[in-house]
Length: 138
Image (cartoon, rainbow, N blue to C red):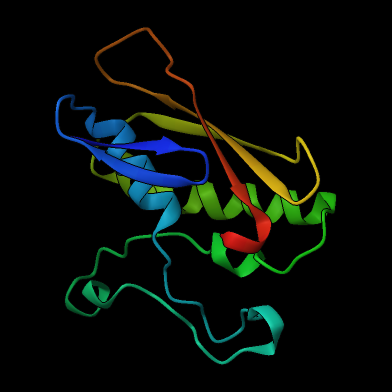
């Protein structure tokens, strides 16, 4: 079983299994709780976060959702890259991957493209996974 990415949403594939891809999707597109100093979209007060984080020291998710109302600027792409890389660090700590590179771009208006390249322990191959998300839906 694995999560697969299909045009702005994830779906469950019961026939195939890719633990790395599933962990990447869950890490990027689950909302982690905002810090006190984070600026919330549209001046909101909801800091979001996954309820399961209340019971574990291992936090799941990313802050990509904080970018949902941002303009298409290079500074926003930099933050998207940082948020994505931060959300994947647990995979390095758990020794699921050696390292990871994330590239954030805007291929078209209001679309964020994240390209994730994890370096695996047991392979010379460097898989590349691409995810698009509408900025107003992150």
